[in-house]
Amino acid sequence: MKPCVPDKLPITAIDWAPLIPLIGKANRALAYYDGVLYGVSNPDVLLSPLTTQEAVLSSKIEGTQATFGEVLKFEAGEAPAGESRRQDIEEIMNYRRAMRMAEDELKIRPFTINLLKKLHFELLTGVRGRDKTRGEFRTTQNWIGARGTRIEDAQFIPPAPEYLLEYLDNWEKYWHLDRPDPLVQLAIIHAQFEVIHPFLDGNGRLGRMIIPLFLCEKNLLSRPGFYVSAYLEEHRDEYVTRLRALCTEPDAWNRWIEFFLIALDEQAKANATKARQIIKLYEQLKTRVIDLTRSQFAVPLLDQMFKLPIFPSNIFGQLPAMPTRAAILTMLNKLKDGGILKVIRPGSGRSPQVLALTELINLCEGRNII
Image 1 (cartoon, rainbow, N blue to C red):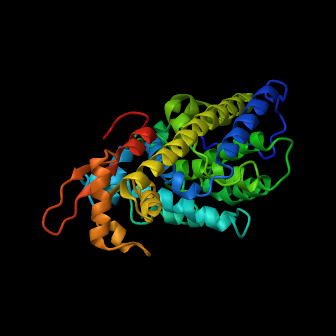
Image 2 (cartoon, rainbow, N blue to C red; image 1 turned 90 degrees about the vertical axis):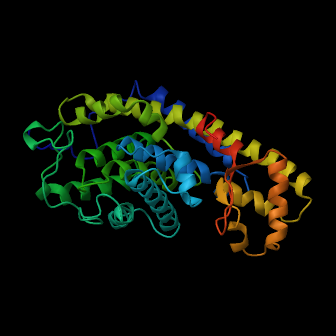
Image 3 (cartoon, helix red, strand yellow; image 1 turned 180 degrees about the horizontal axis):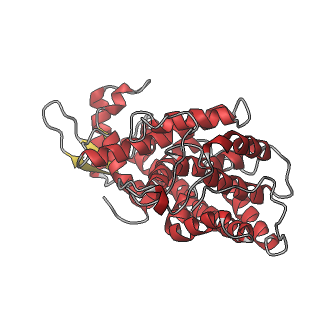
């Protein structure tokens, strides 16, 4: 197998006729999802669990095993089950931090190759792959295959490094072009990035990260809170097969674009359903928390629990404008008695108890895990 030679962008050999119905469906689904979030006063609070879940699923495609619940427990101070799990969790947390960094950057300047390098540096800081020239494009040939596979037996060989900057320059310019349809443009941008594979590690996670960033920059979404990794994980074999065919089959672009548009459509519908459920749960819990605590601090308390659905009981004392420690413990006890919170770990000595907002966690996971 020889290194892939990517097609130059824009792609001219696209058969638009079979794509038009898929484009319409994907646009409608994305618009509906964005509409669900429109007018929500605290989307950062409500979408925080979904952001973590996207980080978990995107990393899982790359082989990590840590779960959504394990990440939440780690943030609450619970030790993971072994060093490998700890490294998985740190990769997931890096993904989330990089996504937030990107969101902040896009508020002040357009997407650039330099931002891509910054995100890569953040993604690999302190985790596996940190020694693989993080934040810098590769200068050596890489390849994809099972662990320990020689290049002669590789499943895919990205472009040779001497042509990398040429391909990336073409890719960045295409990002900022006005094209007939931005969703087809996004399908090509994501695929071409994965084909180029510009870094020694972390390419898959970065490639999925740029999907919501592009949607936001092109004003197809009001914020980059769109999560597609659940669909790609569920259809991983087809996802990989259609990407790799782009270097070997002349008519592969249309099949890839069709797959990607269906992914956007299906995932936008699933995201909208999950977002509606979370918003409904928040409003229900707000009423219950206010009724149980009879406190002016009920809503700030609930907001913090949505940001960290598993938490140590002493975390609220670190927040501004909160009541005394005794008052907080009284509220938490009322929420436990009311069935809103569940004890994950009892307090012992100087170690505080760890509590979980079970309804939110189980809703995000789609099953009862706590």
